Each structure stands twice: as structure tokens, then as C-alpha cells.
Length: 170
Image (cartoon, rainbow, N blue to C red; front, side, top):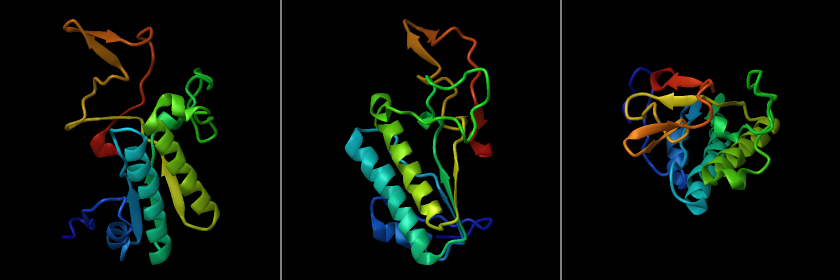
């Protein structure tokens, strides 16, 4: 991979420990933002959960200085949290991730792996960006509104504030 502004790109499958090891080898800081975005539990378990474990293993093997794991606000217990205040690190996580779907379950399991590795000494931090949009990621998604008969049907009462973040800022 060619260094570009201090960043090197490595292509491979996160589910392949050898590919993940090659990608991490020689890195001081690893920003792990890979995850399965579609499919059922087998795809999410392999791409997100096993992939995260492979990243953790490679980071330990090569003594990285910092692992930055990009997670998702989908792991937050939205139904159980106080909606009048901000979401913080202390906010409860989803108690029933299976009911929210394979993506939420996998992101939560991946966070648990990173937290356990951090507790065991791996320098790691977990970031949960808001609703990412920009470039090929549309602002109007199924989480905000649904297209019905040529119009958008807004979910909820239309008053919900969204934690929007532009992709370049992530």
C-alpha cells in the first residue's frame, strides 16, 4: 500500500486473520471502522465480531500504540435512556440487541471485545459517531423517514434531534 498523508491502505477481508495481520503490521495507530453492513447474523458475526477480534489480536501481536474502534450509536438503549439529556459514555447499551437486528448485536459484541482487550492492557478507545451522511451515504435514510407513494413519511413526531456528522468529519 502507498503511504498517502501518513495513511496506508491495506485491502483484505477482516474475517481473514492473515490479511488483518498484514494490514496492522508496522502500524502505530489502528483505526478500525470495518463492519458488515448487510446480511444476516452469519455475515455480521464474521465481518464485524470475528473481524474485530482479528484486529485486536493483530494489534496485540504487533504492539500498536493505539486502537481506535469505530462503533455505532445503534448500541445505545434508546428506549431506556432519558431523552432530555445527552447520550454519554455512561448511557445504557441495548439490553435486547437481537430484537434490534444483526448489525446492532454485532456492533455491541465487537465493543465488548474491545472493552475486554482494553481492560487487559491494549490501548484502545471506542468512538460512536452519530448519523453519518455525505458522499454516497444519503442524509435521508430509513432511520429518519420512509418513502411512501412518492412522499417521505417522517418517523416519530418530527421533533427528534438527529446526531448528524458529515463523513469527512468522521
